[in-house]
Image (tube, rainbow, N blue to C red; front, side, top):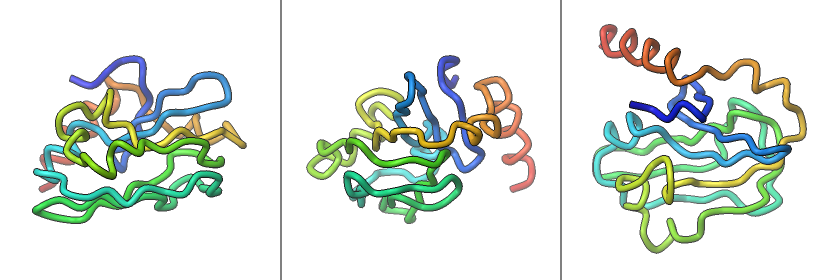
Length: 130
């Protein structure tokens, strides 16, 4: 199950909004699909990000995954622990496995995100198409 207090992007990204800041990570579905994560290319602090654009990359033993920003903003903080221990994403994708904190410049993109129930429906449809 996916946490109800988060919003989801259809590219398997989660976001937790707190005021004008948002914590961003990948969903449990994404990390399960990737398998063992071996490297995370984190964004730079103060990097400007745009909604639906790649801002980080995750490498696993199976594939490379582009982490797409769900919003427009500026990276304020990165999870430096992932540099030494990228497997944290596999172990705790919704907690210690967060990727970055983004200061939201334009919150209109939040309207395009879906809640946990809608994300579950989206996953079921996506799995049927495969």
